[in-house]
Image (cartoon, rainbow, N blue to C red; front, top):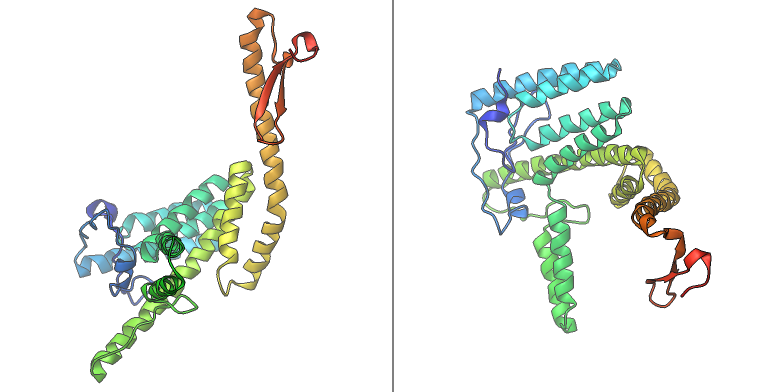
Length: 320
């Protein structure tokens, strides 16, 4: 069967319910509001008809089940190829299912010590989850409102701003949706079932997000280098703020946040030294025709401004 992705417009949502697996609960519309971008109108969703969609999901689940068996048998390379087959069959608007597969692929790459590929797959997983339960936009929105509340407003205005923020977020202390049930008994019962399913999907999204973040953080930390280590630290900081993190993950996160800072500083110093060495080599090449070298120039830091002053000490003598 040709790839299902070629037939669909890539959009933000559209998970459907399938009784065989965890795949697909239809969003109740609340998530669409959270991730709407005022600068761009959402693209129309082109979906398969229900029968064809179920057939594609069933085929994808079959590949996924086989890949899970390969993973359990430590045949990680084969598992990656089979997970890729599951992705190729899956409709590309099923973001949660895509995120699960990409996270599993990341786990395979970690087993193979392919750190970069593990990071890339985990990032794809997180990108798909972001469409379902946006984190970045919510954080920016809270920061924007907090900034507005602190710009020249009196105490009363500040209190009103806090109340608006709570109402807009529509979540309790655990991040679950807070919605008032209304209508007759049958309608209220249906609303309650929908909310329970929505909460289950939110928990699924958070669970896979934790796994993907843990895998990306490990891949980045193993890759090494200043940028990767700093990025790993950021991932672990995000994980440290997630409530009810599994105990084993909590231990890993705490350990990483304790050991990463000195590694980051060492990597930074090394890369800065390497960079200065390359600049010095380049400078010597340019200065050599004039009988000069970079050793004749001294860089001195101004303790007050933090800037650097260059002085010339020809032949190693005093500054001129």
